[in-house]
Amino acid sequence: MRNSKFIISCYRQMCFYMLLIFSYTTVSSQKLPSPLDIPIILSGNFGELRSNHFHSGIDFKTQGRIGLPIRAVKEAFVSRISVSPRGYGRALYLQHPDGTTSVYAHLNSFAAPIENFVRDSQYIKESFPVDLSLSEEIFHIKTGQIIGYGGNTGSSGGPHLHFEIRDTQTNEPIDPLPFFKTQIKDTRKPQIRAMMIYPQEGKGIVNGKTEKQVLKISKDKAGKDTVQTPINAWGEIAMGIKAYDAMNDATNIYGVRELSLSVDDKIVFHYILDRFSFAQTRYLNSFVDWEEWILSRKFYMKSVIEPGNLLNCYVKKDADSNNGIINIEEERSYNFKYALKDLYDNTSILEFEVVGQKQDIPTFKPFGTYYAHSKDNITERDGVKLSIPKGNLYTDIYFTYSMLKNYTPYSHLYKLHKRWPLHKDCPLEITLCNDSFPDKEKYGITAIGEKKISWIGGVYQNGTIKTNIRELGAYTVSIDTTSPKILPILPNKWAIEKKISFKISDNLSGIAQWKGTLNGEFVLFEYDAKKALLFCEFDPKRMSIGKQKLELHVFDACGNEQSYKANISW
Image (cartoon, rainbow, N blue to C red; front, side):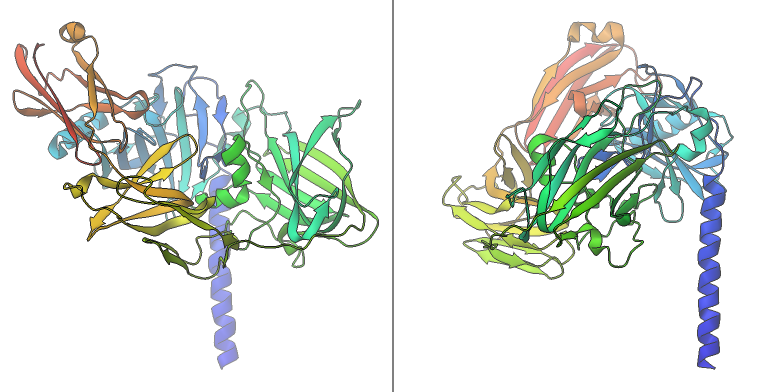
């Protein structure tokens, strides 16, 4: 009886997963019309490597222009609208009957009915940033209907349309390129730029060295990629590669969709990046050589899966592949082969030899406290407490600690290891060595880099500042008592252009809030964070012609306020 129930349960699970696979296959095989009325050229593809995250969509070029019509790719209803001075800027989320959601970001404006709805919501909330969830009845959208106009809002680096397809149920982004594959020509294969080899600490050596080494790539007379440096190794090693994809009609570089590494015709590492969850996107910091990115701004994709990296794009074909670690244990030539492939099956191959040459491997002498990725780790000493719950380290480390007394008038400087990524927020507490400043809201924890001080902030509680960090490094407590700066831009043209503009800035904790009024009534000031631009355009629905008393108040994250007052006339 128990066996029968078990078989029935397994059958039901199998049917469920087959249904999921069928649904995804059906959706991903669809073709979609372009959201633009111009030829499709991409400036960015799905899964590109970005700081702390994978790119979750594709970027359509808009010919460097703002204001091009953006059309819905399928019948839908508007399920969400967000407006932010950073990130996606103005963004629309359309929920479709087939279980997907399409996202349109960095818009300059929405179609008139949606724009009016958003503006009303902003005035009700008295806030420029809004995040609105909508029911199905409010905005029904037809295929090809204009929903907005292309722009450069939020953290966009230039005019373009950021477009996503998400699984509505899980909110996971799916590579949208297959939906537009027939509309985009691509005959160019990925480009391999360089390679990195990693002897494992105390277990491997390469060309007489235990440090990681860059291996330059060149092309031979036949145009074939080759490794310039002979490789002699012994013991355990891992590989990494710096590579980009390319597409027709564009000079942009793109992310690599699929990569595999084989040794003696046996695949030891393989990934296909066509879907991920936002909860996993920060695993990019384990997927790449994070230190190399921080130091040189170069992305090397490591062909090894660290034990704390749970990214789901890895294809594990061989149970004994050792997650990409290769053991050179025989004095012979090992045949390595990288294969990089895009959606169009354009493929680049890099073949090279690693010669097994017996060499003495120096004993690894660790310095610091051993922190296992699979356990909770806590440092508490000298007035600082750092908690790293299990799952926040991608691999085991030897944690180093040092302290510089009285770095600021209020706190010591705590060097909590070298710069190192953490996956989620980890609690950090620093007890003040001098709690003499009367306004406790002005305290905040700062990260001290070689060239930059970054405000982290925190909450004061009984002489201690508490916050969360997502990176190890050097931290102290500072105060911010300086108000933001407000600089009017060509005020003599405000009346003519029907637009009030300011440059605003802050020295440390950053712009947090702002509020503008005309004759004491709230008016909407929009903020473009990347340009430090705050502006208010004349709104005939809510503003009157004639003389007005303008007041603008800008606050930083510590509550420091700067005000600007003037008499204006529309």
